[in-house]
Image (cartoon, rainbow, N blue to C red; front, side, top):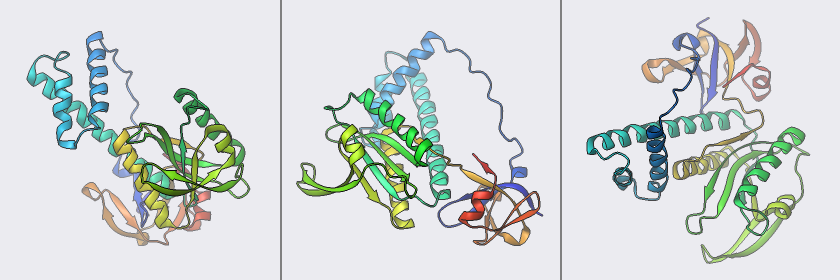
Length: 297
């Protein structure tokens, strides 16, 4: 048997095996972070603020803006350039990792059925209470109704109004409130628009939209929206419910189609590969079999 206890992910088209023997370092224990000096804290805070502001600019102008914003903090031109390059690279790497993790979690959970948007209403909340209360409501719905979600905070381009966008799985019988169709005039596109609003959230938080997802293509389209918001806002993803990144399975040689990844350290598996735990056959890969398999992140 080529692989024992490999991590299996789904990229939307194929199952990918990550053999643990090809990544022998495993999870490294994080060393305690070195306390930052006052000067280092000041540099970091200045960079974070400049980075956030630069995201509003065309991509080719962003680094120049950050270097300009940090002139007083780092007077030396070469040191300033090196600092901005290094930290911008860190931001880019972290963003890529978040996108990869998002894709794996979304694709492994096959039953997404709504793409939802919740819009901040200043007549009902402050921004702080909107974020806190909405997150708390999601936690209760995960625990009591079996909801799952992956989403991100984002601000509207023209108004700067805060939104939460997310892909949701709401199980049968798990919906709260009712979905009602509403129509109003959009000043953004200058025409009437239709929304499917949930009365539970409408009463407590204001405008919302529950768009039903009826096909894998619509799920991938919604995933693309979340990717765009991560790129634009730099916000961290919000997860809720049991959403593993991988399931774990032994892999037989006949189920390996071809190597893939950097240095061919991963493998593309057959669409009907056999799932096994400690040599015990669990069945051909399917939603029902995956639910029985060990999970990993």
